[in-house]
Length: 97
Image (cartoon, rainbow, N blue to C red):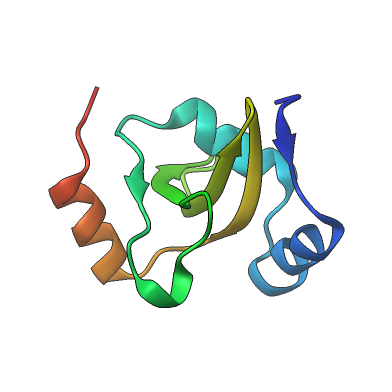
């Protein structure tokens, strides 16, 4: 994904804290089967608003991807294994394609 921007700090956190790489995030975008959700929690509010989704990478690992869309570019905020509550919310509210 040429339009995916990952800051050095975010990339370091992905690797060290979650054992994820850029390719894992790219695979999630390709494998996504449901809609994005808008992040509405006040403590996570950004301008423009963050959006998120949950999808599997090619190894079958579920990953929550949080990003911001600006001028055709995708700015990754975070990616990590989702907890049960996030999976439930996503599966309940998001729309499948």
